[in-house]
Length: 507
Image 1: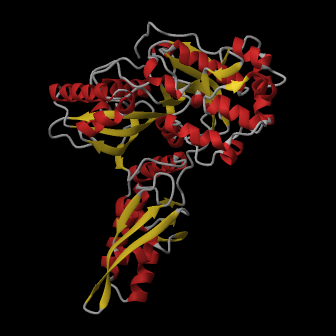
Image 2 (image 1 turned 30 degrees about the vertical axis):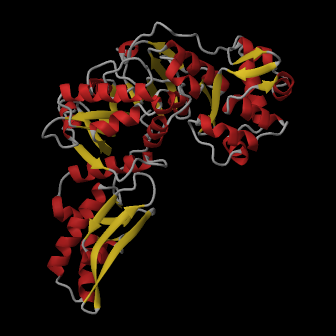
Image 3 (image 1 turned 180 degrees about the vertical axis):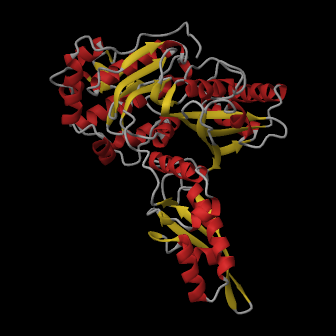
C-alpha cells in the first residue's frame, strides 16, 4: 500500500453519543436494506451519475426517509430545513462537525455516501470523488461483497481485516470474533472504519495504520479477510485499486504472509488477480506461491481475461470522464504487459487453512462457472471437510463402504439426444443451485446410484441394488459410481456421514 500526500482526515464523531443518536435517527426513518429497496427497488452499489435523475423521481417526497436517501445515497442537495427535520434530534450542524455534511446557500450536501450492507450502516466516500481522490474509500464494492460471500463464519478468538477500507469486513467479523483488528495504510480508511464501528455499536474494533502485516507482525489470527488493491497494472495512484508492487507481486505477498499469520486451523480469505506467462495454466502462479506455505488451500478461479479486455475494464470510469485519457491508459497498460511477458490475467481467490507444524498440507484448484452471488462460506467449509476425508486414505474401498447423502441445494441436468427413434442421454450433471454453484458431470448409469444417496446405505449396497434392478453389470456400475462419488465429494455435492464438523469454534 502506497502512502499518499493528499490525505484528508475523514469523518469523526466529536461526541461518542452522536453515533448512537445517528443510528437511531436512521433506524427510525427506516433507512434499512428493506426500507431503501422499497423506495428504490433497482438501486445498486455504485450508483451511476446518469441514473440519479431517475432515482430522484422515486424519492421526491418530504418524509424523512426520502430526504435521507436523497442526501446520503444519491448525493443530492437538500434544503436545510428538510435535512434538519429528517435528522432531528441530532441536527445538521453536528454532522457538519463530524465532516459528514457541508452547508452552503441554505442547502445541505453529504460529503460521503451511506449504504446498508448486510444490515450494517456503512459510510464511505462519494462515487463521484473516485477519480479525483487517490485515498478515496469505497463504501462497498462488488469485490468487497464477493469476499464477504466467500468468508467462512465461525466463532473465533481473533480476526484481521487487512486493507480494511470502510471497515465492512471488520464489522461483520465482530459478530463472531472476540477481538477484531483492522489494518490499512490509508488514514482516511481508518477514519471511516472507526466512524462506522461507532455508528454500528462496535467501538472495540482495533484500528492500526501501516503497510499490510507490519502493524501485526508479531500476531496470528483465527481468521483473516483481505480485499487488497490486487489490480495488475503500471499505475500506483489509487490506493483502493493499484498494487504498489510489480505485476501480481502484491497478491503473492498477501497470500504468503497471511499463511504465516494464521493460528493452526485458522482460515484466510484473499481476493487476488494474477498474471499468466507463456505456457502457464490458470492455477500455476498461485500454486507456486503456496509451495512452502504450510496451509491447505483452495485456489478459486473466476475468469481469465486477455490484456486488452482487462485494461479496458479497470480503466472504464475514464470512458465518459475523459475518453482520450482512457485510450492512453489502455495503451500504457498493454505496453506494461508486453514488457513483462504477461499473456493473460486471472481473477479469483485463495482460501487458506493453517496446518499444524509437521503435517502435510494439500492444495486444490477449482474453476467456477461464475463468481458467487450468494453466501458460499458453508460450501467452502464443506470442501475442506470433504478433502480431509479423502486425504485420510482408504481409496475406493473406503468410498464403497461409506454412506453418503446428497446436498439439499442441487439439481440434476440431463441432455437427451434423439437418434433412431429413441432418446439417449448425452450428458448428465449434478450442480449446486446457489453458493459456489459447482457442477460435476456424471455417467448416466452412475446417476441412478447417486440419486439414492440418503445416508442410510453404503455406496456398494446401492450400486448392487441398482445393478440388479436395471440388469446392469455390477462391477462396471460399481466402478462408475465410485468415480462419480469421489468427484461429487471433492466438489462438495455430497457428504460422508462420519465427516468431522469444522464449523465448531476454534476458541
